[in-house]
Length: 528
Ligand code: ADP
Ligand code: MG
Image 1: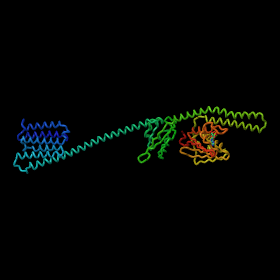
Image 2: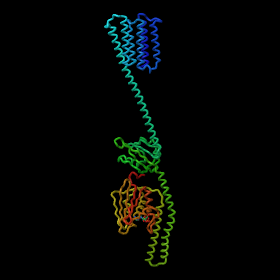
Image 3: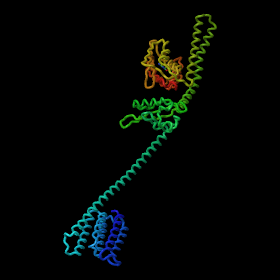
Image 4: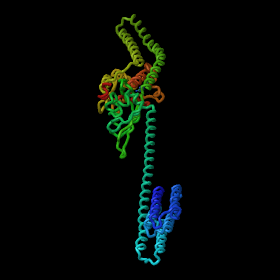
């Protein structure tokens, strides 16, 4: 029940009652009962306004209030003798208000009470009135019709209102929920952003078209570009990262992530930066690839430290080398000196030739030692070009006295420096040749594995013991009386300079297999 509306209607009711009393047969005069009733009624409504809404909402209290209305109106009728006038209209109004103020269950009893009192008034003033008189037959049923229709109308309005209120409440709740979820999402996004921004790895996310959707500060730093110059652009438009883009393309088109790979990129300043990276695929609801995330590390510092370490290692070997060189060179020098003295005192031309041949052996040996040392100690920047391994190795094995079988299904083009690679394979092939007798057979295979070109050098020589296998690459390690022990150390260095790999497998008495992994030459990388 809306207290405001009911109190307003009650004021209308009170005013109507006073008005009807004024125009009644007896009229309204100061101090008379009708006057007092009007005053009481007015005061009662002022009290009503003061009553707490909760109390009025109680069915019993509201019923009492409306019953009070009927009784006050009836007494006003009684004291002013107005039954013959328009008082019955006041009853309609009272019942209407009672219906608005409470449920049907409450308004019908009020209507009954009102009808009974009204009927009694009518009967009192006309004791011989017929039951079929319009005052009974029309007015009383009308009271009930008013009561029913108005309470029905009030009830449905109330229901409507309640529904509206509920809906409003629901809307408010919904709005709150939406705001909460939105706030949570923002928080989550900020949280994710914070994580992405604080990791020490570069992170770039691209969609399936290659448009960059996310880039974190470390990626900006490594690439040397600002976020606003990359985010939203196609990753292909970023200069110098073609190799990385190729890898991303490969991962997305084959739907296979890439774990731990390395490429070299050019940053905005055109500096070369080696990066180690993973490519993780992003998938949609149906498992289709929708993009990928590249997480990478700038390896410049690691590479610098590695180079420093290698340099330091070489320096330690330098000390060893000095004494070794002194010793190794003194031997051939002594023999050269001896043969030279013999040469002075001899006239025999055959002997002379023998001595000269010995002297030349000595100088060759010294020459070999010096070039090995130079190759090992040299630390210069290598320029990578296209090298055809098939051609290179073909020219090395051409003059060998043993049987050689070269097999290759495809081209064997690698990125490298020809002179260094020649030395690498000469050293390996020499070792194989030295390990075999005249029945030996050397097999050389080339094949492609991922982005590697693998060269396999297989001999059926005497093989290497397990203990020696561990020391093969240690400088000066040799099992040969005239060996320098630098051959494989140089091989290792060249392979490292080429960012390649080498594996040696061997079994005593059966033979040795060397696998050399070098980067495949790709047309696009030529300018790099
Ligand atoms: P060097 O050839 O001067 O001895 P290397 O570094 O080339 O020095 O080789 C070191 C050692 O490794 C050799 O002395 C030899 O014992 C062993 N070795 C290398 N390659 C082979 C091979 N193909 N078969 C057997 N032994 C080998
Ligand atoms: Mg050797």
